[in-house]
Image 1 (cartoon, rainbow, N blue to C red):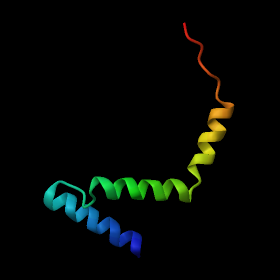
Image 2: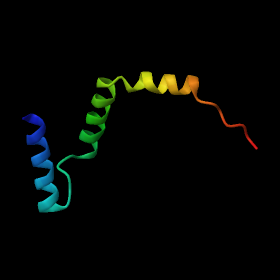
Image 3: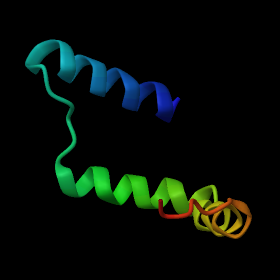
Image 4: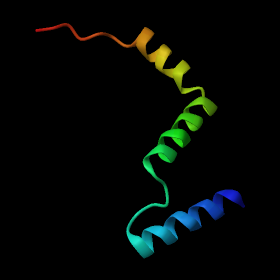
Length: 57
């Protein structure tokens, strides 16, 4: 229910004002929380360790 509530608030704001109901600081905080929740830094570490590096030239 809380997800539906948040989506309704966001879409209502977009419809009425053309803007989301989040400021820049809130977006940064939410993004950080989501990245921590899904352990995104660990995925970045795996990618960095396993991705081939392009050579210059």
